[in-house]
Amino acid sequence: MGKYKLDYFSKYYFYEEDDFENKIEEGKYILEQIKTSNRFDYKGHSYKYTKFGNISQSDTKRDVDMEIPENSINVIIDNKECHLDLIYKFETKQLEDHVRVTTRISERNDDVSCLIYINNNQAKECIEELEKVKKLQESNMYIK
Image (cartoon, rainbow, N blue to C red; front, side, top):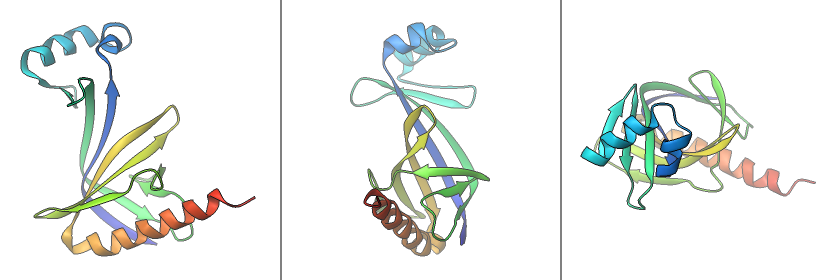
């Protein structure tokens, strides 16, 4: 089992403007603010328009613990078992100080886009372990 300290872990939720009018608490206020500035930080969330014209809400944490158990299709992030949907999306990009992993995390009611930033010292080993998790996920698709 590998244990890693993520530099950043971000989740991204996507909404239409109508969602802010009807479903999101304080949505009208948030919508007014992002219409004015295109980006608005509020109560630990960051809101902005995306290139597709919808609105993203991002939640970013620093210095997050991640464990990758052996022979598991899931990982543990901040002591919570999570399913990274590595079959759907698993992209890596080398940045100056760390490697960014783009994927999706399955939550009870939604599939959420997420970014994992891991420092260069741990990145190679972490990505190799995530690749093993992806292979396990793929093999589970074909088990009857």
